[in-house]
Amino acid sequence: MKVLFASSEIYPYSKSGGLGDVAHSLPLALKEQCRIISITPLYRFIDRKKFRLNSPGTVCTMSIAGKSYTYELFRSEESDTLFVYNDVLCESEALYGYDNDALRFGLFSHIIADVARKMKVDIVHLNDWHTALAALLLKDDRVKTVFTIHNLAYQGIFDKKVLKKLAIDKKYFTMEGLEFYGKANFMKAGIAYSDKITTVSPTYAKEILTEAYGCGLDGFLKKHKKKLKGILNGIDTTFFNPQRDSTIYVNFDAAHIENKVKNKKEYYKKLGIKKREKPLFVFIGRLVEQKGISIIIDLLKDLSMEPLELVMLGEGEQETEKKLSILSGKYENIHYIKGYDEALSHRLYAAADFLLMPSLFEPCGLNQMIAAHYGAVPLVHSTGGLKDSVFEGKKKCIQGLVFDPFSKKECLAAIHRALTLYRDKKAYIKISTYDMQCDVSFNKSAKAYMKIYEALL
Ligand code: GLC
Image (cartoon, rainbow, N blue to C red):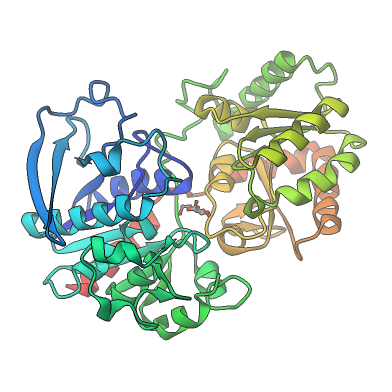
């Protein structure tokens, strides 16, 4: 079986969030079971030399709506990844956020369809709206398509004018197709025309059928419910491995938890914190509403009076960044580091006693799994993939602190439970070491994807 796995971002070449991580680790886990080739744009900021891409690439041409487009295909020496270069798609400074995103990713979808036909693959696995039009383009082909929704909140909604440029026939611009309040909705194309839809956790698969989480597409998804399945993500446990991770101060595992503590000591030293017995909470993530950032900001005053240190690493909405900078200057035990730094995030997971992850909604979430693997006990809101992977008082998957409903009061109560747990050193270490040994790899889920591919053939 030959699978083409398409994503607009793949770590370490490009990444804006969890999609990039999953597009790296899922194909890796599937490699044992099928022939899987990934395809992603070769953005200008990707270093061709560093990733040893063959050069020159193979030049291909396509004719779309009477216009000729060229793209170049590059292969990497180190992974089964195809990089596509087309000037419209790849010449931007960042991944997304441009006026011509519809054309950029519409072209990417055309390229995916073209490559799938040329390579005669059996399955095309599409991810999120950036690749969704390929499901429509391939709907009458022999190839089967799987469409994975990583986050329904981002749908790719554009002026319908772009459809003409992309040679998408008017007959698809209907309620059953990709029409959405007079606009073109790329995600709808993925939902309507793929052979199977998956999303990244069983709970999120249920949630998106409700008005509260459906982002306007709950009714539409309900119509395609038979095709929909939730499969929990995993992480690449070779990459996220505290025993080998070269970016952390001291390596450790569940049998040598005393070495984990050395990471925290080092980090506290760096921050100039004297009272080293206080627990360290970390928040790592994009500063957007989804991540529950409003609750955290509301809580900071209360937390400034608690015996804990909180370190937040992330970037996002400017207003939030500003607020966090001001508040961390005001409260001694609250620290905000603006930006994103992969190595630093590893050091924080290694040093932390708890991960704070109060997401308003979370399709799957990966940070709770990474944290658990590094012995940092997650504190989460019970939603989406967090609900499926973190349990309080139950030895099921990851053990942590879970709060519900989504409110400052409930979150604070969970933080108090975390502090009580931490005071009982033995009980805390038992949970932290239990979490480190949980299977958070992609193996189980890769099997579930394999089953889906097989059932389609
Ligand atoms: C998105 C979701 C996140 C999920 C990730 C990978 O970033 O917001 O919850 O873990 O995709 O599927």
